[in-house]
Image (cartoon, rainbow, N blue to C red; front, side, top):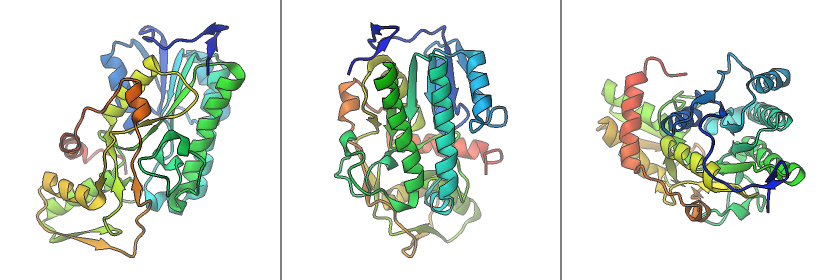
Length: 327
């Protein structure tokens, strides 16, 4: 599919380093990593607002802000996110909040003629039992994982809105679907975090207190793929400068490990020497979630940060910020 800007066919290339670049969600795990990557690449006019400064669920406020800053580029990294417990307990919040955030930001970007938008989704958009590794064309081919289906539906809507803008207005907007992300500025809340930051906090607390054991949810057998946020940010800039197409692009490492293996790795990094127990009465979630990253590789990008290196960096960051991280 060919897209056009002002009637001229669009060819991806180096972005204007002097143009205004709005990162929605610039304080979060992914957004903050994108800001760091853009700064290192020489972008001079990166803008963003905290949720306290700008409620992205407030349509009028979003339109007013976008009209004021007039960005040329937008990355939509803002979202209400959480782990299995949060998603299964508050499905209305995850559906409603994310739908409003997405519709407001994307509509405001369209109203202000934003040239290039990158919408970030989640690998949970794919069916629970999708063939592994999961290809982009698996979207909407089966039932979703019920513990996070509301969040997934919202993200699917964001993909379709991005595609609809391409069809109706010819703008070169794209979307990317990251695998499980981790790194600095993650949510380490005991009740709202994803599996990896939750495990880091649990094992680090146990190591510090000298606890004899740690109990994790499920059986430990599900397989998961993990990507450091700095790698994700690098992939985002690469896609903006090298990819244009209607299909969402999977972003991951192309390899996975079991939850049990990742728990053992975290125990080693944090120095925990006790026993690990598994509460099999709690849900496992999707049995495996490994992305096919062939499309990303064809675009010229592969992950660089190994899981061990990324874990050591994340644990070090967590320990440096444990007194100030969000709950």
